[in-house]
Image (cartoon, rainbow, N blue to C red):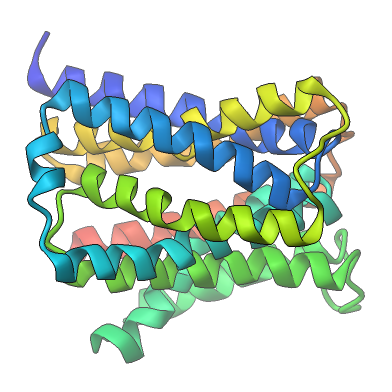
Length: 295
């Protein structure tokens, strides 16, 4: 198999797995609280990432991580997974999955906005157009198709979903300063965050859950949303001869996710969710086209 074909294969596997996680979030939250889902998913993610490091032969890299890098990883772990997923899971708890998933998908737009003050980057005209299109899509989803009314279906849930994109973007911007191997860094983020997440879980909801089905869902989320899919995506980016060829595959994920949300979660997909998602995808696509034209 050619190198680029392998890149597409790994990229498609990652996209297909990411397409399932909104459904897994919603099904798991039927049996546990958001912080409990975060706790049990983080355990499974930490274990699977450690297994990946063993298979890759990167335990030496882990042992030789400088103290300063360990401190940085601990701080980043408070952003992701601790704060990011807690906020995201709470958003999914309050909103239908068909609304929370597209709203969270705007993280790329949030990243471009934050890069202006934090990375001293500049917004081009096409970036501003992309932002406008995407955020109009947010209004369409959040107001159930009445964007001019500014009457939100659940204002707090919408705020949490958008807030999660802010946390996620900050995590990746701060990580531009890191020189740790990506999988090692992600493992350390989860490892250091786990005691903090456990403490919050113990102090708020406790560890008892309603059904064993919740644990199955949390394990799935930990392995595929937080763990192995990230490794597959990194592998695809390393194999490809052009990152945009693989990056464009990500546009399939939210569309496939809506079908799963309908057929497995049982949500009737509102026309406004579909239209808003298309606008958000269009905004992200505009941004990608702009990057290629500059290159």
